[in-house]
Length: 250
Image 1 (cartoon, rainbow, N blue to C red):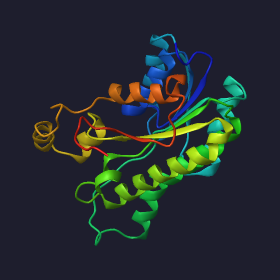
Image 2 (image 1 turned 120 degrees about the vertical axis):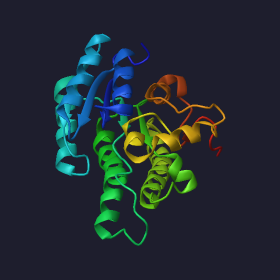
Image 3 (image 1 turned 90 degrees about the vertical axis):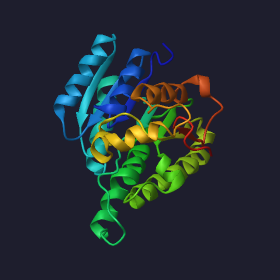
Image 4 (image 1 turned 180 degrees about the vertical axis):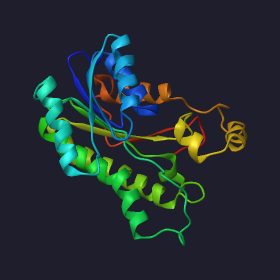
């Protein structure tokens, strides 16, 4: 119960990696506030999974690229669980689609930067006033930020690169206040992300390239998030940690 007595806010916490993170933190004692945007059924299912492990949580609808929705998230979090937030996990983000540079336009640029970077900025800004000493922020970058991404993922990779740099900046700014900030850079994780934006044939081919010969799981990610949010990692901050089965070494 390494997170006993803590309050955790998980954006995008209703499905896939966000769901695994929400359940893991709750299982380890945290009271979880999970944000969702487009699927209440996913949020309800995640709440049920949390109840099954003996945890306590609420789900709050909102678009994390809109400041008013972000304010609402943290207002509801503190009204329900008190004035302190000890863990923030910024999962919100995504590839959205694949486009070459010729196919991209201003709206595409704004959307990819908003959903991946602005959401992280907004939620961090909103959370910090509630975060006491020894709190932790965990952001989500990507392997794409390390290698430029796959075909048509240039703006996604760029946005995730911005998240990596923002993480380092926040580690410096918030460190004197006792708040740590780290990020994960996942490789191929078996979620609906790759169900939508990859092919079964390519996924099987890639498994033969990974040193560990498998895709990662949402549980693999949740375990690392829990570690980075805990006192077990109390001297780790400003890191972008690769979790990709050995596909890329920084």
